[in-house]
Length: 139
Image (cartoon, rainbow, N blue to C red; front, side, top):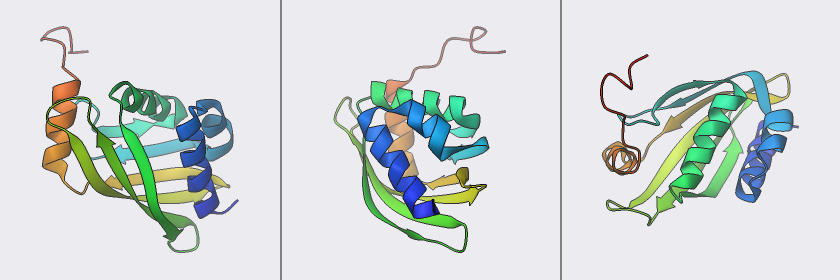
């Protein structure tokens, strides 16, 4: 399966809530997913379990992710534009974003999300996901 097919399968499975297919058939065992920002969901996620937990949090915030366009990028990659939106809180989320996917061993291995409006995304995520007070949130 090429990168475009893998990303399309990920979106199809995500929209059906089929995280098991994503974990077993789409994601590489050494997956690294980078989401920029200054909010509780931002940062680097390592492995399928962390990314799927992130996906589940998106669902809790009623975030819809609509794939707009996807295309091949290089020999082993794909790039896509998607709309992330939610009416669940104020501020609302409605943003176009771009994501780069690199495939290794027939699976998505490296992902970098580029936010169309980082400030709006941070305001939304910070309003939905409250941090625990210190010292509870410190490891």
